[in-house]
Length: 100
Image (tube, rainbow, N blue to C red):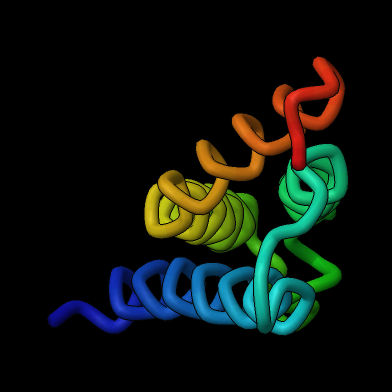
């Protein structure tokens, strides 16, 4: 593989791995609050790629790092969508006073 393209691929992998690990460490046991979950994902997506991989200086490497960050956030969300759905249902139940 071309060395230049390999660097872009590695930047994407770094962005993905770091973002995934940050989200996983924040929600190790369960997602208790949907607002906190959304805020955590938004914070990760708002973070500039240079904070994750400062050694990736070119625009292309930073764009690939950001792409990895987005993929990690999306994968994290989809892997926990059932837990999120149950959290929303439980919140609605509590707000409506139907909890035992």
